[in-house]
Length: 392
Image (tube, rainbow, N blue to C red):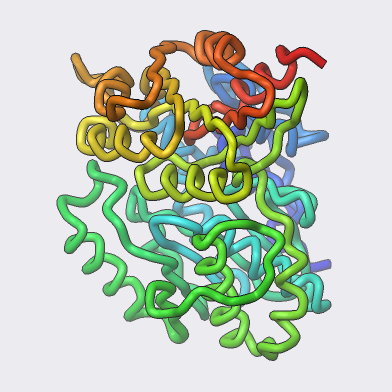
């Protein structure tokens, strides 16, 4: 197998993140010696079996290692940005890049799954664990499928053969002043790409997918359009795509005990939260408890009204404090802003920490309920704690 990174020694700072863990696994598969550091243990560290990973303290790269730094740890140590490293990987292969406000992880996974099932032997770097693919990154001899990131404008560095933007909605207020600015940004990036798919121009597929929800029918439509540009016959792709079972932390059933179902989802902005809770209602028309961990101070400041309104689709809402990392704390900007904007009629609970949230969810849950944990950070820990705490 081609190993274009053979002889390289790479140290990833923030290796436990969704993105950098994928890059680390990919670099290892392409022949590099890989080590890394993260501030805390995460769900993605589980995908790094066999790698030397330091947890806590400060990063300490060995002599002779190139340092790649996550956006969450800029300023902690010098090194290349993860965006620059990803751009290098994309430049080494025929590539497909998927971007957009919502659904880019699932869409990238759908494209990869179909390519692999049809014997096209793809490589992939995706910001989520995909059980059917064996993780969030993998190496083959075919096309490289990458999930891009517009949150810090780094997707503009990528020069693929095919690009798709699933949809456009202002979600990263620190990077863009308006949705119009975001649209202009994407338009400028797509001008340099030979083959382009704009997901919002497509109708949702009418296939019987294994992954629920109208939003996933839209994701599948985008994936099928990308696959056609990659030379895959539409009928063959449609026959395979219905077998895709989903991405970790995307409406993932964590467990069911004592008559309570616990689902974990990455949804973190109003549109995604609403889509997840709406899907939960369609599939499980029972009492619904939403547990949300807000992420990013600026998003919380700008969207707390909309975030609170989206949680109204549940019968009860528990909100934690904001998890930081991308921007500095601002006095008065806490998860309470979101909770206070949950409409009357919805039972509301304040739980500053993840442990507080799990405890409160266990107090509220009754047989027949569905608990949905939501957010970018580590609400999956809440979901696991709830399952473990429920009576058998």
